[in-house]
Image 1 (tube, rainbow, N blue to C red):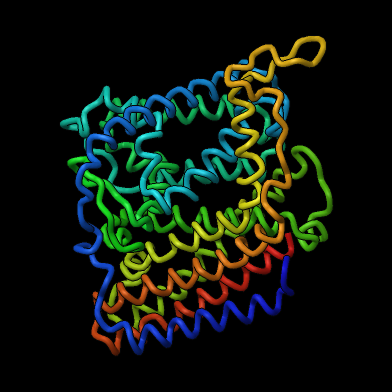
Image 2 (cartoon, rainbow, N blue to C red; image 1 turned 180 degrees about the vertical axis):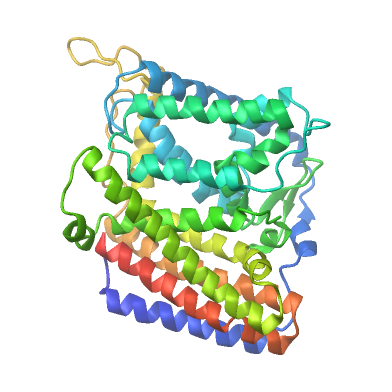
Length: 426
C-alpha cells in the first residue's frame, strides 16, 4: 500500500467526521428524494437502448449457456486459467457487474439470463402470490459465499456447474409458480445488483427511456422488503471475511488446514464476520430508533440502503486488482470455454482469437490500484453518511436528524477502519 495503515485510518476517520459535521451544518434540505430519483429523460436514446438491450440479452444468455456447459462438460481444473466457468462466475459476474452497475445503472437486468427466460412467464400468477420477503435471495447469496470462501473445491468447474443447475432450477421453478416477480424475491444476484445500480446517475423508467439523475438518489426509491437488510449485511460480512481470511492473524487462529478440514472453520469465520457486521449495524439502528421513536426493525430497514455504497466500495477495494487482471482471462477463456487442448498443448477451439492470450499483470500500475482500493473505502463510507443524513433530513426535523445519525457515524467509522485494516492485512 502507498501509505501506512495508521495514516489512512486517521484520514478516513477525519473525512467521515468532517463530512458528518459539514452535512449537519449545511445540508438541511433533502436532495436525494424519490422525486430526484426520477431524474430527467435523455431524449433520442430509447431506440438505441432497445437495440442495446436485445444485444445484452443475447450476450447474457449465450455466456450463461457457455458457462454452465463449460462447468458440466469442460476440463475440470480449478482456477481461472483454463475453464470459462470460474472466471465467468467469480470475476465477470461477482466483481465486474457490481462495479459497473454503480456507474451505468442496472445493466444486469438485461444481461440476467433468468430475466430473459422469464419472458416466457407472466409478471405474477393469479392465485399464487410470491413471498413478501427476500430471505430466499439472502440464502442463495450465502450459499454462493460458501462456495467462494469455504468450499474446498469452490473453484472446480464441475462444482460450479452443478451449483448453476441448482440455482437455475430454483429460479425457473419459482417463476413457473409465482411469475417473474419471483426473481425480485429469490435471485440474490439480481437483488444485490439492482441495489448497487440505484447509486448510478443513469436509470431506465418503465417506458424504457434513459434518465439521468443525481447519484445516490435512486436509493430513495428502493423497496426494502423483509430480508433485504440482511442480504446487504451478508454481502458486507462476506467481503470482509474474504479479506480477513487472507491475513496472517486468521492463519494463526486456524492454522493451515486443507480440503474439507478447512471448510468448517471457514464457514464459522464467514458466519462470524456476517454476524459482526449485522450486530454493529443493529446497534446503530437501535440508537436511531430511540432518538426518532421508530420501531427498531423499521429504523434498520429505513437506513439499509445507506449500506449499499459501502458494499460497492468493499467490492472495488478487495477485487480491483482481480478485475483488472482476470477480465483479460475472461476474454481469453471465451475463445476456448471448455478448456480443451490437443496433445501438443494447443487449444482445440479459438472462436475469438484469444485462446492463446496471456494476462498482462502490468496493465495498470500496482500503486494506482492500491490508491483506488484505499480511497474507494473512504469514499464509499462518506457516500453512506451523506445518503443516511439526507434520508434523516427527509424523515425527521433537523435536530432529530442530526442526533439520529451520531451512533451510526460511529458504526461507519468502525466499518471504515476495519475495511482499511483488512485491505492492509490481506
